[in-house]
Image (cartoon, rainbow, N blue to C red; front, side, top):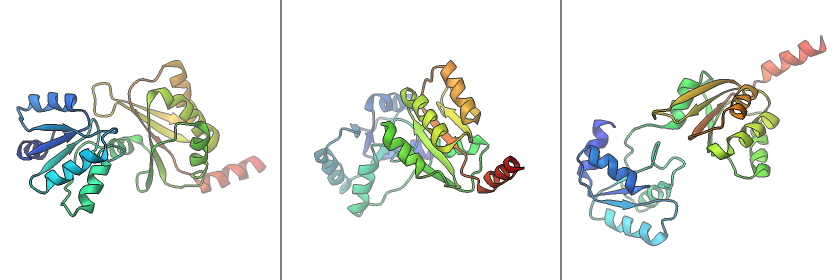
Length: 219
């Protein structure tokens, strides 16, 4: 936790949290007594309107369950509604799985494309990957443990055996990085059942390397 984050959580009038139970533990640890309310995937438009109305009189802090609030996070509608209503929205820098995984991946970082969570069904997932086959930027993807193997198999089939890194449980106790080719990572998780939350970093399309390999093959 950054000092600025703690100050803001103490000074605001209300904290909107993805999971109030987890956030309450955090607040207790730092002796913060700010009032909590929930804001998650199942929050309806009525609650959203109440929070926007509350902003007309006081300040609200948005807290996600993990990572950076509003990035692949149910807090996004609240941020959008606040911006649309003309309120000032201020980011408080903190952990971001996208940047953390990319920085430690060993893959190019000068240009990257974040794809969020890939589609759950194989067909849409493969079509999305196929649309990025010639994308030169490094690709960053979030994935859950129960879909990790299927996603890796689709990455291998559609994008090929590229270099990649897999970050597991970033910034947590069981943080782990695996690096290698897609096939290496796939073999590892066939032997070791995946657990935790994953960020996948996949090397971009390299036209020069492909041309060199074609010349070698023809020779």
